Length: 385
Ligand code: GDP
Ligand code: MN
Image (cartoon, rainbow, N blue to C red; front, side):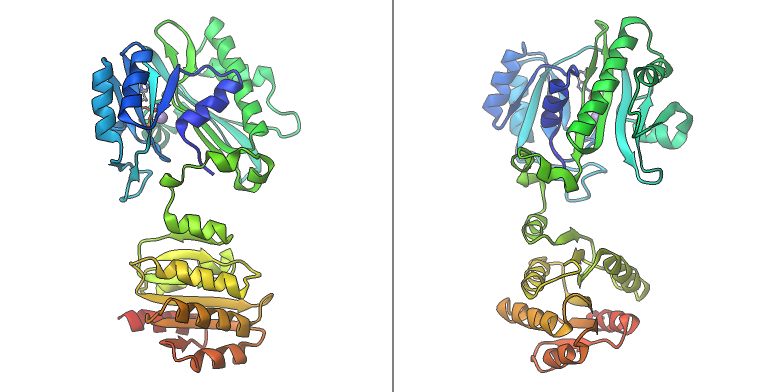
């Protein structure tokens, strides 16, 4: 689960990490008022669920409240496209107005989970800022990584080693040690899978502060934090993804034309691979889960059909926990309810498979059954020809 920069900064601030003074605005008049409060010279930052805003015109320094207001008018409702948003872009509904800070140096600092070693990694660089991806690919030696032992946690001497490696000395170095320790505390207490500060800056006046912040919460821990569901900005999510999450379906929109309805994430990935191998382009990844019920299958069907890019539907179900005839009933009911005329290919196997196939054949839908995964994939690709 993602949150906005201003929310991430509120969390960091609560853990003793310095952030610039700021206010979030929902209208351009609020942008003006907030800019006045900051003394006119301030930074106007579009709040979207993606980074790379600086290079896309989503972060600007202004000198007068009116200038901030004009920028607000321009940004609100506009879609910002960055390498992290995809070609569609994300629409600006909230703007953060912050006091401007004179930056002397930009650093990079983050904590994330390394699934390979099952450890949290502290990642830092003295070459922070908007070109961090380039630094990582062209001069990886400039990125410091440190695995945190889950049993001992992060010790002050380890944080100091990182601060020294960033080239910091004296009081700023000590500030950085505390900041790193607080960051780790926030990471654990808030059940994050990522906290990233880029840039972490030393100001001209010599203070260390988090200029940008990104936090991703671990979805599996959201239930432990009552306040998290209210923090979601639904304007930043695909409406179909929101609908899917209500029914506990894992749905991700992809670029192609074949809607996929599959039970189990592993089977879903295999399905996408096989479709591609037969020259098909999947329109989505939709996993109804191992114990998919008839209702869930029906909801999944409706979600797929709301995507105008879908020209055909590929169902790949293994009836292990759920019987194939029940799944078939779900497909038939949903297809009739939404008046689906698109070609459907079903590959089914498992419990009650013959009964499931019979129901589908007699349903009157534009449906074919494949004998196996390869045969079914070839059929749907051919039907869309
Ligand atoms: P991102 O591009 O989405 O990661 O957005 P950031 O919040 O990191 O902003 C992009 C860049 O704007 C930063 O790397 C800074 O160089 C610059 N920036 C952000 N806030 C300030 C500020 O208060 N003062 C100045 N001078 N620059 C800022
Ligand atoms: Mn940034």
